[in-house]
Length: 484
Image (cartoon, helix red, strand yellow):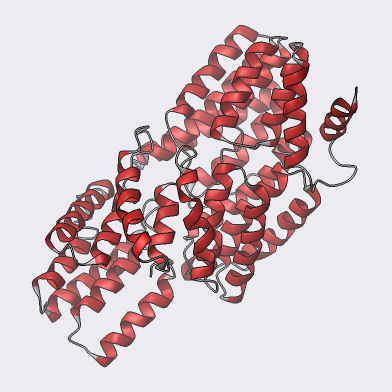
């Protein structure tokens, strides 16, 4: 359960009920496991129905202690009256109930751990004080010292600190988690969240290779796809494009065999659909294969924010090819998806899609020759992106807005300003290939040879395992750093 192997957890709790039909806490376990990954967004009605049924069966059994009753009533908040109480309100009520249990039973380590998880899962992505994450991390760190082999502590520390500004705090947990639960696909994948946030691409690749293999062995295709999305992102940052291409091909095969009705691992069905769209999109965008991006086949899924990936990619490819009408079509598609998400009351993803729409609006202005408007519009996208954080389903934005702003400034021959934008991107997305290259190019054009060499050297270090002869930007970096 602590490693988000929810199908196996439910089997275990059912086995308990077979041995002891009066064990109400087993129904609590089924109910909380039915909720699935708490970071995975909105839950399907069938999922809510399953959890509610477990709560009702637990109540019918009757709790034998006050603490047992408190656990059951806490998880009930996630499910009861879902027809007229929205999910964020129910999640907040669950968090408050776990806080009360943790306070009432300070000797109950698990209560504190589940409370910390609830805090992290309910964090506001626009809160740059990271209040929930830091509070959860403090609770978990204190226990991790005492229980260094507890899978939940290592796992939830990574989640609590899954932001670029906090990720270094999770380094020890990331190093340990895979060894604590070495046969669990999610335990092998989760360290890559930390490795991604700090730009340690090869470590992300290595742990996701192990995770995908374990998930394949456990018949968890959604987890294979989620690990592959993080892996392909890392391959592309290191210019290992051939390896990325193989993942594009194998992921398509994996998704073809995926049945969303039987997603039993840590990754929900939404993560599988997201990866299905994101992996080929990243392969186009990170290689700057604009013609391929512009003709990327739109994909349909039950998750509108996953559908948006293809349209954004097509729009950005079209912009680079100066096809204004195709960019306008992509903008219209993103507007429709944003509006649908707004109607669904999914404010987070509606905002994320609107940032992508704003990026394409800026690119359309640039294509049409309105350079000042393009910069103004891209700054709006960058400022909006600065105010939020990426969801755990993705290793990073398809194309950071500040990186795009830096590229526009370079094209307008404003290298000093461009350099600042690339540096700002690297503060949030360390070791991104195109921001490192952009910073080097901007410094070179600004006449700062020393800083240009520094960024070219960093780029070569990040891409030490790059394909040969590889991307022309790496040849430029090698030539720049060899000169006397």
